[in-house]
Length: 367
Image (cartoon, rainbow, N blue to C red; front, side, top):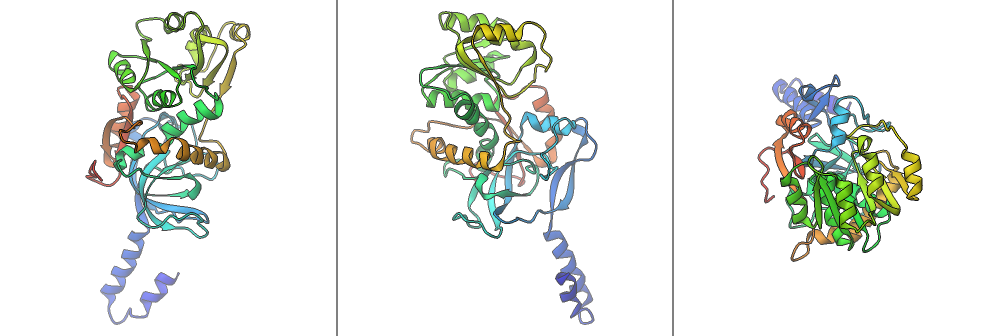
């Protein structure tokens, strides 16, 4: 109430000044954000003025320069993937920007205007977002904000799947489905960094070419050929040691056929459906296969903090190597006002790499 009482001291002296002051304070605490009042299609994404979050203890308020799309965003928009309890209802799982305000009790040496990128539980499609300091990473000096926004969710997901879940070893063959996607392009590069052998599937020659340019040894167009047969031929019948699968459903039999003895099949999405019919368990048992299911958004803060710390130490330096070893792949950029078009672009499955949202208008790629 202080911002109301203080202007009242000079209300009689300057009414216009008082009105302007109250209006200014109100505007300063609001922000633009994408909201979904009714679940449904991209047309239900509404750009509205909402209260700006205040950083809690141990949190940092970020002025968002750019955010990036993920498949989970489409599901949340349809009402199929709600945020964890207590988290923002605003869509968006990764951002890059500058630190605006430090909340009480922040322990690390962050300061206002530091360039950071962050993993979120939600809230990314907005001008400001409050984030636990454990989930912040510095933006490499050679990356733009748009490039940085394409890293947190996609690259941490790929790193988690390969290192924390599958525990990939040097020399292993890793089959990456959707090799032209954000997670797929990150996974291919990480497999090479960890001295594995990346093999991919994709739905177009262009996506296969992109994956091979990033380091995939071989790729298979699932629309035109059997990837199971391709993996069999490439490995001399041994199969893939690790499969990163965001498809699920109708691919199960081909996945089991592609799996090496004692292999790890990591399921992190069900774009191809959730229902399974047939002898999945029997065939998986015959391979002594490990079926591992993993999500990132619902993990604990401590788990994510450990993941961010490991990624920052083991992977992040390779984005600023000379020559650069790793690079985020940007498919396209849209303004926050065109968020519905961005969702339509992803739903059409046309993107190769990440779709980025410029939150600050006219953000320059060199920024």
